[in-house]
Image (cartoon, rainbow, N blue to C red; front, side, top):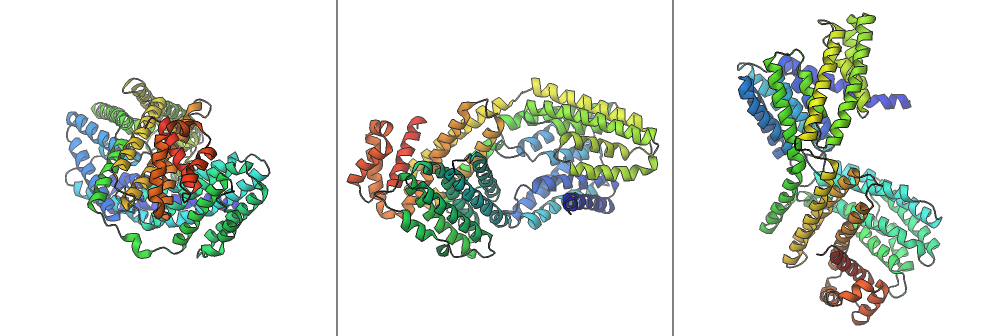
Length: 631
């Protein structure tokens, strides 16, 4: 049974691929079968991205993108010399526009599709049919998106939140028993960041949130704060009872999430927990901070269980909102078209434009393998291109040897179609294991031609083209606009600080805490989370001790700002007092930077008794972080 489940998805995917390719071949002819292949690649890659927030706009964009690509590829096929600048400009545009610094690049299926179009050109008479195939491909991508990702936020949140709550309950037990909770902490952070990435893609016009997205982001941030605060409970008084009760509460929240209709939050046990542990004058600050987050969590669960369906589709874009949208879009452009994207796009475009000319000029048989190799092993980072090139060469050599064994030694030419289908299936199964996928991809590619050519000759051609393509890519990556992981790290660090500085300028110009201000905070949360993910992924944990400190300081600052904002929304009558406290902190810089929080909070509480110790603590943390960052 376990084996059937393991091969079930690859079998379905194999069937879908063969069906789509067959349909494209039947409807649009054999010259356009490759468009079906590139469409499948795009569908698979885009499944991790949600394009359903603007379905009509995105469908139109994809159609126009594909049609323009088809027309440009046709023009480039008219003259070999004219093709050089056209191919360069086209591939540079595709790679630069669809490469991202803080999220995964999605240019590969479209750069592959463009190569398909120039490798298999059509006549003017056949051009309309090709354009129809490209339009169909674009529409098919969006149809699958609407089928799979239409309610992605809701479906994924109902899976992710119970998992997080289960791990939070386990973490409280681990802290109580003095166990290592680092693996649980990492699992919780990974799940929260996964949900944030989903919410990042689900924004309207790359800025606005549906009501569902807003509620889920609020819950994710609150739970993230609870997770960060848990370790502070290890030294509080009567910690065992507290951790037991908190773990039980997390289990009840998990059970509520797992129900088809979320139970009333009032029945989970929040009020009993608050009554037992809330004492503003005697409770530890760490406990009060956890209770503050639980109060927000209770409100968030209420909104989660009773969503306003009509509000989910209302997006009133006032002039000020439109202005902020443009501000965030400037960030999005910078995050997309920067030194990384331009370097990658330039190298890919140069390599393909020149090699495509040479393939055409010398009429190189199977020269398309050279172009596909270049497209496959060209990566933004030099280190990644070098690694993938080596793995691809190894995989191709092994695959070529298997082909020679099957067709030259065993003489199983009549089994070519079966070998090709089995190889495709195994390529799908080993999709995430590069060497194995290259072995089976090589067998599949050569099997399709073995009836008309010698297997040994085909294998040698394939290996030679892969080696030449790999050498071209590695040389370009090393010497032409080289971009390394260290370069990416520096750019990401600068980008993070630029975004924070701009955010503080927005705070300075904000008249009050409005819906616009909340939009800024939510976008800031998501954008910086993706940057943090990239920074963490680009650096070996032991190679840079200062990286985690860099992330923690800035991440903590953003979280503290968000918490103060939420507290003020719940306690609007304290706004004047909070302003006075902020002024006190500003005027007593030495005390803020030197004294313990408890002493400073006690002094402030004597003059401002209505202000919560929690928000004073957050204000102190913000001031210290701003001083450390020289803001």
